[in-house]
Image (tube, rainbow, N blue to C red; front, side, top):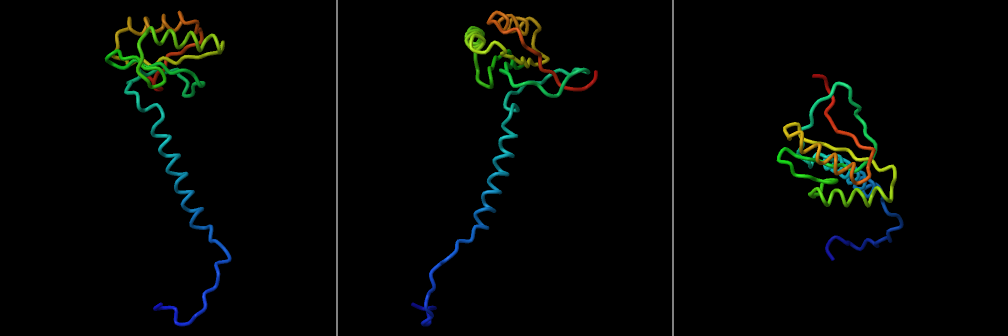
Length: 136
């Protein structure tokens, strides 16, 4: 072959791991960035502000009501009977079940109360309303 020029070939005795480690670190960083972007930003809810709010909430079932009144449970569309069924089955298995309700500020107050009644009717008594942090 051209380029051999009679030089005997030596067998590969070591594998260079540096490129593999570099690629894996880049993939890890990309994965971390993507999972942060996918968090709860997929549900378009404009939260009202509250002066005395906490920025952290315990892990709980997230119930969202958007401006049109569409109901979502953990990001998936649902209706009120399915919500009640889902929460009652979860409440029977986990007595410390918590629900966080995020309702758009433009939504009618009666809609929010109906969903709260469904949550309480399912046997969940630990619930919270999600708000944006900030004064006035």
